[in-house]
Length: 270
Image 1 (cartoon, one colour):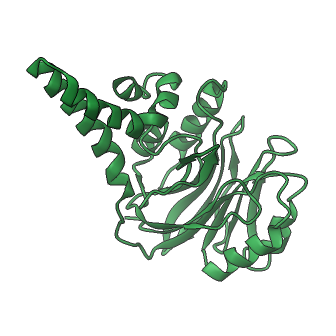
Image 2 (image 1 turned 30 degrees about the vertical axis):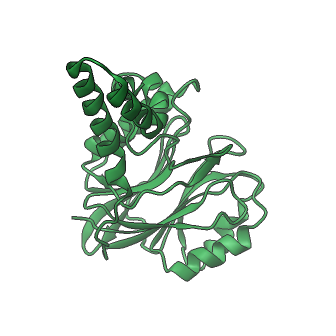
């Protein structure tokens, strides 16, 4: 399972399997000691190293950036604690807010943010799955929506440089049929010029093929440290994070009525 999980660049099934990479790595430690032939011990040791190096490094803190502060949040479509969330967003002094699951029931979040974040863009993919952005910086160009649920993007200018703010919500890789959503996301991102700041709910592990492709395509890196933002039963999963040209530092914000924790990142644009 560890080895298969590294094939997420080529198919969506390994991306789902890679969720358990750290757990599978622990089992490989047992295999390393139980194996008899020396070559098999070495093989297990290499797999253990691959499992932990590619996951543990994401848990380490990063140097904070001061170019832009970004707040990302999957609202949950039926959220009733929107006023408390808006208070938290405004208290952080974020420059841009990336929102997912903006629905007919929680649409008031954009209205409440309008005074502090007057420049807004909403992509309605259904009555419950809108993707939105709100910015203190004026929108300097044409906003973009992907064809299927994946991306909302707007161009702004930060310190005389063009920056694309991108809010992301891509469905689960497998068994969910998300191939068109991934293709739409990559197509839109490939066409954007200038620096990109991408934040939201990726529904994939930060070490997955999906995230790796997006980071490579956009010349961005993850802000850290990565921490769990979603609880699947008793399993904590890091599904929400921020990508920027120079990475940056991030912290986890409270749930505020959602099933996803928020992410606040201070990022570097260079």
